[in-house]
Image (cartoon, rainbow, N blue to C red; front, top):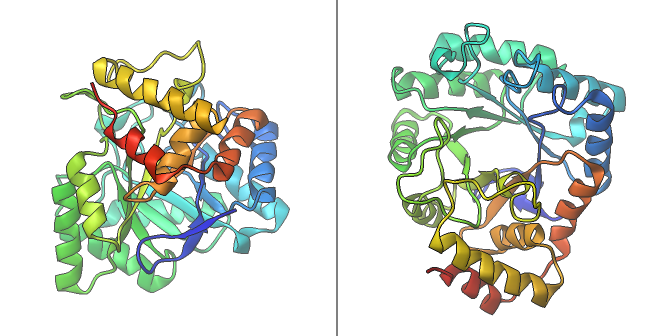
Length: 320
Protein backbone atom coordinates (compact mmCIF):
# COMPACT_ATOMS: atom_id res chain seq x y z
CA UNK A 1 0.00 0.00 0.00
CA UNK A 2 1.16 3.54 -0.75
CA UNK A 3 2.89 5.17 2.23
CA UNK A 4 2.74 8.86 3.11
CA UNK A 5 4.62 10.99 5.62
CA UNK A 6 2.57 12.18 8.55
CA UNK A 7 3.35 15.86 8.13
CA UNK A 8 6.59 17.15 6.61
CA UNK A 9 8.98 14.98 8.60
CA UNK A 10 6.82 12.58 10.58
CA UNK A 11 6.58 8.80 10.42
CA UNK A 12 5.51 6.88 7.32
CA UNK A 13 1.93 5.61 7.44
CA UNK A 14 -0.49 3.92 5.05
CA UNK A 15 -2.30 6.29 2.71
CA UNK A 16 -5.61 4.79 3.81
CA UNK A 17 -6.12 4.63 7.57
CA UNK A 18 -8.56 1.99 8.83
CA UNK A 19 -11.11 3.40 11.25
CA UNK A 20 -12.02 0.91 13.98
CA UNK A 21 -14.88 2.81 15.64
CA UNK A 22 -17.44 0.00 15.54
CA UNK A 23 -15.06 -2.88 16.22
CA UNK A 24 -16.08 -4.77 19.34
CA UNK A 25 -19.60 -3.33 19.43
CA UNK A 26 -21.63 -2.92 16.23
CA UNK A 27 -19.05 -4.97 14.32
CA UNK A 28 -18.53 -8.27 16.13
CA UNK A 29 -15.18 -9.90 16.84
CA UNK A 30 -15.26 -12.32 13.92
CA UNK A 31 -15.96 -9.68 11.28
CA UNK A 32 -13.62 -7.17 12.92
CA UNK A 33 -10.78 -9.69 12.72
CA UNK A 34 -11.53 -10.44 9.06
CA UNK A 35 -11.48 -6.73 8.19
CA UNK A 36 -8.25 -6.15 10.10
CA UNK A 37 -6.59 -9.14 8.43
CA UNK A 38 -7.77 -8.02 5.00
CA UNK A 39 -6.43 -4.50 5.55
CA UNK A 40 -3.02 -5.72 6.73
CA UNK A 41 -2.77 -8.25 3.90
CA UNK A 42 -3.30 -5.34 1.49
CA UNK A 43 -0.26 -3.62 3.01
CA UNK A 44 -2.04 -1.37 5.48
CA UNK A 45 -0.59 -0.54 8.89
CA UNK A 46 -2.46 2.56 10.16
CA UNK A 47 -5.29 1.83 12.64
CA UNK A 48 -7.47 4.51 14.21
CA UNK A 49 -9.48 4.08 17.40
CA UNK A 50 -10.39 5.98 20.59
CA UNK A 51 -10.89 5.31 24.26
CA UNK A 52 -14.60 6.17 23.91
CA UNK A 53 -15.40 3.85 20.96
CA UNK A 54 -18.16 3.13 20.91
CA UNK A 55 -20.16 3.95 24.03
CA UNK A 56 -23.24 4.86 21.97
CA UNK A 57 -23.48 1.47 20.21
CA UNK A 58 -25.97 -0.82 21.95
CA UNK A 59 -24.28 -2.15 25.08
CA UNK A 60 -21.16 -0.10 24.40
CA UNK A 61 -19.51 1.66 27.32
CA UNK A 62 -16.33 2.87 25.61
CA UNK A 63 -13.06 1.01 25.28
CA UNK A 64 -14.36 -2.03 23.38
CA UNK A 65 -12.57 -1.05 20.17
CA UNK A 66 -9.25 -0.67 21.97
CA UNK A 67 -9.79 -3.98 23.76
CA UNK A 68 -10.49 -5.82 20.50
CA UNK A 69 -7.44 -4.32 18.80
CA UNK A 70 -5.26 -5.30 21.74
CA UNK A 71 -6.49 -8.89 21.56
CA UNK A 72 -6.05 -9.00 17.78
CA UNK A 73 -2.49 -7.64 17.89
CA UNK A 74 -1.55 -10.07 20.64
CA UNK A 75 -3.01 -13.01 18.71
CA UNK A 76 -1.27 -11.97 15.47
CA UNK A 77 1.93 -10.92 17.24
CA UNK A 78 2.13 -7.91 14.92
CA UNK A 79 2.26 -4.86 17.21
CA UNK A 80 5.63 -3.77 15.81
CA UNK A 81 4.16 -3.67 12.29
CA UNK A 82 1.14 -1.53 13.24
CA UNK A 83 0.97 2.26 13.45
CA UNK A 84 -1.62 2.65 16.19
CA UNK A 85 -3.63 5.81 16.85
CA UNK A 86 -6.07 6.37 19.68
CA UNK A 87 -7.66 9.38 21.37
CA UNK A 88 -8.44 10.99 24.71
CA UNK A 89 -10.84 13.68 25.85
CA UNK A 90 -14.33 12.55 24.84
CA UNK A 91 -14.94 9.48 26.99
CA UNK A 92 -18.00 9.93 29.22
CA UNK A 93 -17.13 10.25 32.90
CA UNK A 94 -20.68 9.24 33.78
CA UNK A 95 -22.11 6.02 32.26
CA UNK A 96 -24.54 7.09 29.56
CA UNK A 97 -23.58 10.70 30.15
CA UNK A 98 -22.40 11.36 26.63
CA UNK A 99 -20.18 14.22 25.54
CA UNK A 100 -21.44 16.84 28.01
CA UNK A 101 -19.84 14.71 30.73
CA UNK A 102 -16.60 14.04 28.83
CA UNK A 103 -13.29 13.46 30.59
CA UNK A 104 -11.65 16.52 29.03
CA UNK A 105 -7.98 17.31 28.45
CA UNK A 106 -6.59 18.15 31.87
CA UNK A 107 -3.18 16.75 32.79
CA UNK A 108 -4.81 14.40 35.29
CA UNK A 109 -7.36 13.12 32.77
CA UNK A 110 -4.74 12.54 30.07
CA UNK A 111 -2.34 10.61 32.30
CA UNK A 112 -5.18 8.47 33.65
CA UNK A 113 -6.63 7.77 30.21
CA UNK A 114 -3.36 6.84 28.52
CA UNK A 115 -2.61 4.14 31.09
CA UNK A 116 -6.11 2.71 30.66
CA UNK A 117 -5.74 2.71 26.86
CA UNK A 118 -2.32 1.05 27.01
CA UNK A 119 -3.77 -1.69 29.20
CA UNK A 120 -6.69 -2.34 26.83
CA UNK A 121 -4.42 -2.22 23.78
CA UNK A 122 -1.94 -4.62 25.42
CA UNK A 123 1.01 -2.43 24.46
CA UNK A 124 3.49 -0.15 26.16
CA UNK A 125 3.33 2.67 23.61
CA UNK A 126 0.89 4.48 21.33
CA UNK A 127 2.18 5.69 17.97
CA UNK A 128 -0.23 8.62 17.66
CA UNK A 129 -2.30 10.08 20.50
CA UNK A 130 -5.06 12.57 19.69
CA UNK A 131 -6.76 15.28 21.70
CA UNK A 132 -10.20 14.06 20.59
CA UNK A 133 -12.36 17.13 21.25
CA UNK A 134 -11.05 20.57 22.18
CA UNK A 135 -11.40 21.46 25.86
CA UNK A 136 -11.78 25.20 26.35
CA UNK A 137 -12.00 24.76 30.12
CA UNK A 138 -8.37 23.64 30.43
CA UNK A 139 -5.39 25.86 29.55
CA UNK A 140 -3.86 24.66 26.30
CA UNK A 141 -0.43 24.81 27.92
CA UNK A 142 -1.56 22.18 30.44
CA UNK A 143 -2.82 19.83 27.73
CA UNK A 144 0.33 20.17 25.62
CA UNK A 145 2.61 19.76 28.63
CA UNK A 146 0.81 16.52 29.55
CA UNK A 147 1.21 15.19 26.01
CA UNK A 148 4.87 16.21 26.01
CA UNK A 149 5.39 14.28 29.24
CA UNK A 150 3.89 11.18 27.60
CA UNK A 151 6.32 11.47 24.71
CA UNK A 152 9.27 11.94 27.06
CA UNK A 153 8.20 8.85 29.02
CA UNK A 154 7.94 6.75 25.85
CA UNK A 155 4.23 6.03 26.25
CA UNK A 156 3.39 8.08 23.14
CA UNK A 157 5.46 8.69 20.01
CA UNK A 158 3.53 11.48 18.29
CA UNK A 159 0.50 13.65 19.03
CA UNK A 160 -2.34 15.14 17.05
CA UNK A 161 -5.70 16.77 17.59
CA UNK A 162 -9.22 16.33 16.27
CA UNK A 163 -12.31 18.55 16.17
CA UNK A 164 -10.29 21.73 16.71
CA UNK A 165 -10.70 25.12 15.03
CA UNK A 166 -7.87 26.58 12.98
CA UNK A 167 -7.11 29.32 15.49
CA UNK A 168 -6.73 26.74 18.25
CA UNK A 169 -4.37 24.69 16.09
CA UNK A 170 -2.23 27.77 15.51
CA UNK A 171 -2.34 28.63 19.22
CA UNK A 172 -1.15 25.10 20.03
CA UNK A 173 1.67 25.38 17.50
CA UNK A 174 2.82 28.67 19.04
CA UNK A 175 2.71 27.30 22.60
CA UNK A 176 4.66 24.18 21.63
CA UNK A 177 7.31 26.30 19.93
CA UNK A 178 7.73 28.70 22.85
CA UNK A 179 7.80 25.96 25.53
CA UNK A 180 9.79 23.36 23.61
CA UNK A 181 6.87 20.91 23.71
CA UNK A 182 6.28 18.25 21.09
CA UNK A 183 3.88 19.75 18.50
CA UNK A 184 0.70 18.39 17.02
CA UNK A 185 1.75 16.55 13.86
CA UNK A 186 -1.72 16.15 12.42
CA UNK A 187 -5.35 17.11 12.73
CA UNK A 188 -8.32 14.82 12.04
CA UNK A 189 -11.57 16.54 11.06
CA UNK A 190 -14.88 15.70 9.40
CA UNK A 191 -14.19 16.09 5.68
CA UNK A 192 -15.64 14.85 2.41
CA UNK A 193 -15.97 15.90 -1.20
CA UNK A 194 -19.37 17.44 -0.60
CA UNK A 195 -19.23 20.69 1.34
CA UNK A 196 -21.47 21.38 4.33
CA UNK A 197 -24.08 24.07 3.95
CA UNK A 198 -23.24 27.38 5.69
CA UNK A 199 -24.09 27.06 9.37
CA UNK A 200 -24.39 23.25 9.25
CA UNK A 201 -24.35 21.75 12.74
CA UNK A 202 -22.45 18.53 13.49
CA UNK A 203 -22.66 18.82 17.28
CA UNK A 204 -19.15 18.17 18.70
CA UNK A 205 -17.74 17.27 15.30
CA UNK A 206 -15.95 20.03 13.40
CA UNK A 207 -15.86 19.98 9.63
CA UNK A 208 -12.84 21.12 7.65
CA UNK A 209 -13.14 24.78 6.67
CA UNK A 210 -11.54 26.61 3.76
CA UNK A 211 -9.44 28.41 6.35
CA UNK A 212 -8.20 25.06 7.67
CA UNK A 213 -7.30 23.84 4.17
CA UNK A 214 -5.27 26.98 3.50
CA UNK A 215 -3.59 26.64 6.89
CA UNK A 216 -2.52 23.05 6.18
CA UNK A 217 -1.21 24.06 2.75
CA UNK A 218 1.09 26.64 4.36
CA UNK A 219 2.06 24.51 7.37
CA UNK A 220 3.41 21.34 5.79
CA UNK A 221 4.52 19.98 9.14
CA UNK A 222 0.87 19.27 9.98
CA UNK A 223 -0.95 16.44 8.18
CA UNK A 224 -4.69 16.43 7.53
CA UNK A 225 -6.80 13.32 8.10
CA UNK A 226 -10.45 13.03 7.16
CA UNK A 227 -13.07 11.09 9.08
CA UNK A 228 -16.45 10.28 7.51
CA UNK A 229 -14.96 10.84 4.04
CA UNK A 230 -17.67 8.72 2.38
CA UNK A 231 -20.60 10.06 4.44
CA UNK A 232 -21.51 6.58 5.75
CA UNK A 233 -22.11 5.25 2.24
CA UNK A 234 -24.32 8.10 1.00
CA UNK A 235 -22.38 8.45 -2.27
CA UNK A 236 -23.28 4.96 -3.46
CA UNK A 237 -26.05 3.43 -1.34
CA UNK A 238 -29.70 4.10 -2.17
CA UNK A 239 -30.66 3.45 1.46
CA UNK A 240 -28.28 6.15 2.71
CA UNK A 241 -29.46 9.64 1.72
CA UNK A 242 -27.05 12.54 1.63
CA UNK A 243 -26.96 13.99 5.18
CA UNK A 244 -29.13 17.09 5.46
CA UNK A 245 -26.09 19.19 6.41
CA UNK A 246 -24.77 18.73 2.86
CA UNK A 247 -27.92 18.92 0.72
CA UNK A 248 -28.61 21.76 -1.70
CA UNK A 249 -27.57 23.14 -5.09
CA UNK A 250 -23.85 22.96 -4.31
CA UNK A 251 -24.08 19.26 -3.48
CA UNK A 252 -26.11 18.60 -6.63
CA UNK A 253 -23.47 20.31 -8.79
CA UNK A 254 -20.62 18.42 -7.18
CA UNK A 255 -22.41 15.06 -7.43
CA UNK A 256 -22.95 15.70 -11.16
CA UNK A 257 -19.22 16.18 -11.71
CA UNK A 258 -18.46 13.21 -9.46
CA UNK A 259 -20.69 11.11 -11.70
CA UNK A 260 -18.83 12.33 -14.81
CA UNK A 261 -15.43 11.46 -13.36
CA UNK A 262 -16.73 8.09 -12.19
CA UNK A 263 -17.85 7.25 -15.73
CA UNK A 264 -14.55 8.44 -17.22
CA UNK A 265 -12.39 6.40 -14.83
CA UNK A 266 -14.61 3.36 -14.34
CA UNK A 267 -14.30 3.90 -10.59
CA UNK A 268 -17.13 4.11 -8.07
CA UNK A 269 -18.11 7.42 -6.50
CA UNK A 270 -16.46 6.29 -3.27
CA UNK A 271 -13.21 5.50 -5.02
CA UNK A 272 -13.16 8.84 -6.82
CA UNK A 273 -13.70 10.70 -3.54
CA UNK A 274 -10.83 8.85 -1.86
CA UNK A 275 -8.53 9.28 -4.87
CA UNK A 276 -9.38 13.00 -4.96
CA UNK A 277 -8.39 13.39 -1.30
CA UNK A 278 -5.07 11.62 -1.82
CA UNK A 279 -4.15 13.62 -4.92
CA UNK A 280 -5.58 17.05 -4.16
CA UNK A 281 -3.91 19.93 -2.32
CA UNK A 282 -3.47 19.65 0.55
CA UNK A 283 -3.05 15.87 0.44
CA UNK A 284 -5.55 14.33 2.85
CA UNK A 285 -5.34 10.88 4.43
CA UNK A 286 -8.82 9.34 4.54
CA UNK A 287 -9.91 7.35 7.59
CA UNK A 288 -11.96 4.65 5.92
CA UNK A 289 -14.50 2.36 7.58
CA UNK A 290 -16.25 -0.79 6.43
CA UNK A 291 -18.91 -3.16 7.68
CA UNK A 292 -18.12 -5.86 5.12
CA UNK A 293 -15.09 -7.25 3.32
CA UNK A 294 -16.63 -6.08 0.03
CA UNK A 295 -16.85 -2.49 1.23
CA UNK A 296 -13.27 -2.57 2.43
CA UNK A 297 -12.07 -3.99 -0.88
CA UNK A 298 -13.84 -1.20 -2.76
CA UNK A 299 -12.10 1.37 -0.56
CA UNK A 300 -8.70 -0.25 -0.96
CA UNK A 301 -9.06 -0.28 -4.73
CA UNK A 302 -9.30 3.52 -4.66
CA UNK A 303 -5.50 3.41 -4.54
CA UNK A 304 -5.56 2.09 -8.10
CA UNK A 305 -7.61 5.03 -9.42
CA UNK A 306 -5.67 7.62 -11.41
CA UNK A 307 -7.11 11.12 -11.69
CA UNK A 308 -5.70 13.62 -14.16
CA UNK A 309 -4.99 17.19 -13.09
CA UNK A 310 -7.85 18.28 -15.34
CA UNK A 311 -10.25 15.93 -13.54
CA UNK A 312 -9.06 17.14 -10.13
CA UNK A 313 -9.57 20.72 -11.27
CA UNK A 314 -13.13 19.96 -12.42
CA UNK A 315 -13.90 18.29 -9.10
CA UNK A 316 -12.51 21.27 -7.19
CA UNK A 317 -14.30 23.89 -9.20
CA UNK A 318 -17.71 22.23 -9.27
CA UNK A 319 -20.30 24.50 -7.68
CA UNK A 320 -23.78 25.81 -8.32
